[in-house]
Length: 451
Image 1: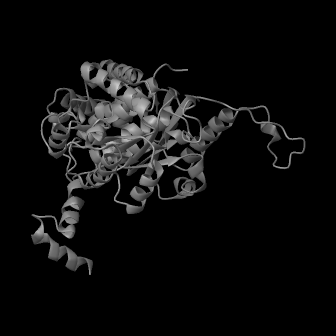
Image 2 (image 1 turned 45 degrees about the horizontal axis):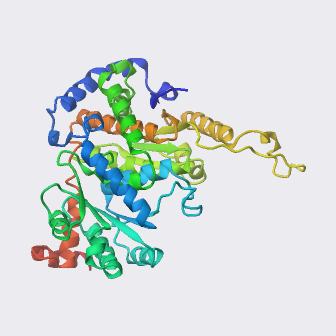
Image 3 (image 1 turned 90 degrees about the vertical axis):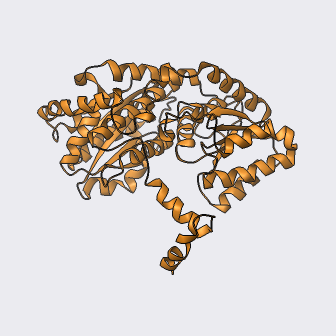
């Protein structure tokens, strides 16, 4: 078994020749130079490149200390944030934790409180029911926002801030509210300083979708009991691989190049496929990373994700026989966290006694391999990413692998992979429809269009 996360394009060799792999080299290396030389658009947001080896060790210690306090004094942690302000943490917690964390004892899940997420939608029902879930139990809040003025987390924070102050009083509530925000400016930083909340920094040089290994992700991840030092160590190892390995052996660079080779052949959609339910939110994090980085200037490969074998009974039909504008990147967890053996039945009514005595993971791997063969036979190119084990170290490697790949891929596509101006369009319309001061000129015109 490989020691590190690795990329394998052999299932796609009927669609991409070795000559095409070689032909991508110059384009990839030019984009790599643009990225590492900080010569391209968005170069002010490249702090993630050296983050795994150059992070703030004092803040890291404070994060672990705050996490331990929350684990001791809270039954529930409310994580408030949207997009990159929560997806990375949720991905890590789900990937490294128990599939049913709140159906087992606190001890069984490593002593962590229950962790819930809000501020990522504007559903009144969701917020009201989350208030019910917290009930009269002890809770803490981690509000994550660089500006403190984003609507979704702002609304949620008002609700849980008021709830905490009613339960504990302002002074004690302040000891249970942790703000991850700008180091000096913004509404949330101003409030945190005036109220005495402990604060952690959203770095100026790292965009939200690249921020999982900053305090943005690390505080809730640490509260869950995940070893954040091992997470950083894994990312540091993948950084070393990405920065110091020649193209021919550099999985992230080859991945970037082959994505563009397929795109030139009309493959407009990339599907990230996994075979572990606990990988689901890594897929959601990946969608944001790729979608916000490449989807601009009317360019980019559309990122989608499926959970297999579950989605083979829904999306599987389209993948197998639909329009041939897709390719798949399959993430294989080589060694599961746990395995279980299939028992024999005296009467083989379901016809699966031939599997008796075999492990479920053995069946899962064969389902995966059979699906790769079926989909490639159906003219869907497949890549494979092998993750040796389902743990913090390997996840740190995987996070960095995808980040480095998309930085190179974005520059190959001639776009700025580190901005997201398109996200602002809906906000402007929403503010006008809500009557926010300063947007009055747009309100009437937008309301007329909705009639």
